[in-house]
Image 1 (cartoon, rainbow, N blue to C red):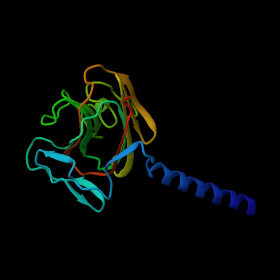
Image 2 (cartoon, rainbow, N blue to C red; image 1 turned 180 degrees about the horizontal axis):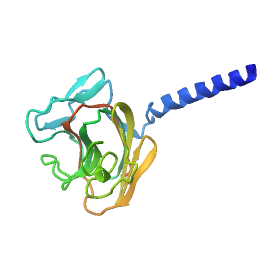
Image 3 (cartoon, one colour; image 1 turned 30 degrees about the vertical axis):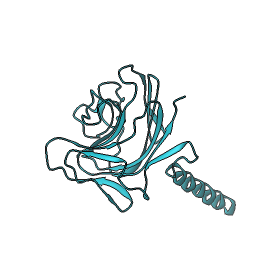
Image 4 (cartoon, one colour; image 1 turned 180 degrees about the vertical axis):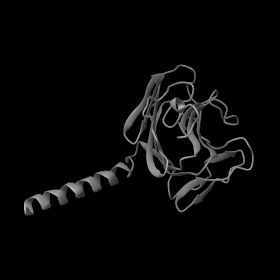
Length: 203
């Protein structure tokens, strides 16, 4: 009995440590921090009218004063890269990470690749963890609402890979966009990003 209890305790401890490690984020000189709890918004340009702000160590938006979505656009242009992000969304949140945006003043799913965060999208095949109009997710459709999640995006050449909480949701190729800006979207609900890191994969 004692051995069994001890084994359970050790297993539980290992599970807790593993869960913490999953949200600790990658480390090393290859990774550049675009946002974390120590960041400001100096490297971001706001497009649209959401109430983007840093609150309790997270980048947050929860109100939009116009019908059009709002974006925070990073001032650096990226080509081949891997993104690691931690986000919290509610069930109605419409958000996402837009990559390789050809025009940093016009952020759309046509001018960028839109990695979606939207559990309640009318067509769920292009909902959370899909790339809108490029690569669908399969049922049971990923759900991110009400918890912290890890969203990872890799763009290398024409290959695009998306992972949500360690599970690959998209692995596809597309030749439309080669490089460009990165943007975070707010359209509805509540979105919080507490960590956004990027690793350059270009030669």
